[in-house]
Length: 166
Image (tube, rainbow, N blue to C red; front, side):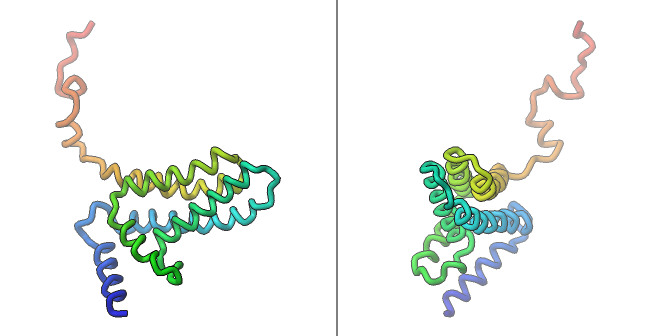
């Protein structure tokens, strides 16, 4: 019990680190969209199981699997009854943001490509949206204007005299 409490306190300290690259609300937004996407994909997956198409059935099963996987990675407290989920969640938190972006983006697009129905678009689309948010986080913050001007092409500089151009 003590190890779990210390793990939670270190996670909370990491989430509220003032030196982090992103504010706390951006990290919580990405995590919240991923958790919501996982639950929505499970919900719409159950609704979508009433289909006659084999490809749509495969897409729904992939969507439900992706939803359960996202919930296990982002909200391991929902899966406390599975003993190995904590190790997987710790491994997931130690990965780079672009890894999550790629995994969530691919897991969100495959069911949509297999079966374009409203339940797959809404369910897998939210997983894809969380992948997009993690992708933007992986790109990092935009540089300020002075850094952008210093790194840019001198031909686009406002100090260049362009009156000689016919």
